[in-house]
Length: 512
Image (cartoon, rainbow, N blue to C red; front, side, top):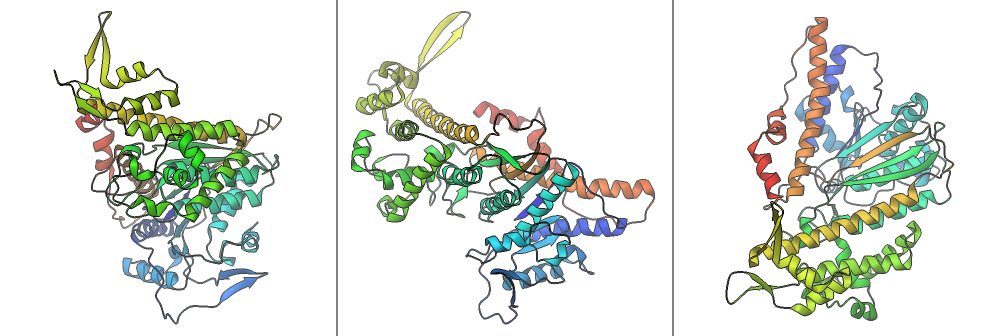
């Protein structure tokens, strides 16, 4: 996983062109080497160093390899060897110039305590402390306050690299570095995470808690550096997961938490049975009864507490659970072919009636919307009956749209309570943290996964352009002798999807 910092105004260091280009080459190599890293540290390793202890803050020692861009020899073998050595010493963070590389340790480490956080406050020399995400957050905050310019941080990597957890640590550090104008804002931002994870995360074959949406968190600061509020934007929610999951994967967490945490009376109220009886949940190949654990029940209790902390009331919670139940019941609507023709006909009207009651739509209108469509030609309305296949598609589209709107409603509710107070100053600064779900290659990729894979390719293309191509052009303009840096240019891949007249993009749009 790599963490990129993109200040609006880039500070230029007084180093030679050769050093800058060498650092750029190291950045690219470091990004490539981090892919696939993340196994457990080797057992019996005798090179483990003692740690630094400052008032109960346990950190690794600083070392000459804290910034790989400073190595005298830069080869793939050397970089890989040094990263492996650091990982075995439980030094999961490494600087490569202005980029922080993190390798997921897949276990708890004692480096995220509040005393450790305070050590990375107003750091004068970066090399005085070992690399840490807290140090990157402090550098961003320092640039915000001193330069009075908005800052942005992009957290990218493959699925399971630890992007979401890194975003949490970074935001927590920002909140410790700054004071809040509104009491409880820190708690509200932290409590928003369980809501977003419940609705937007799911188990995949690579990650048990994979983010299936892209999240952009914007912290709003005063000119003096105090936190005034926050806002969350979400992109590319994987709606297709609601109605289909690849083998060995699950639906969004909230459905399983709901079944584990609802009371018997609530089961009756929402017309639910066990999760194994609902079509959108029982096709993953799991024994769903094993998910009804005390841990899942406790998470549902925490989810409800988070709703209250953020500001949702009891009516909001009831409406939310009603809509989630409606999504599951929509998936249980079944169609058969009519005896006289090929048109679709609903065979379990009791389920349709239940759904219509929950979403407050007359059952006749809902039936008509699922089994037929109306087109208007020259002012004349023409009704056409759907067959079973297209009626099923319409049913699933309704479920996906309802879930997406529900997720958006939750995010809007969070933003309403995180926004700055009315009397806050208008002249503000922002720090943006972009957490995008990682590049993956499934046996069956969703459209949303295709889009996020394309976004990852665009990020790589941005890196290539601004770090390599523009730097080499500056060399040539100034007549500086240089050895061209070779890198894989993915621009043709990006252009393949983004060209306006490309037939592939056209077919995707038509398919939507």
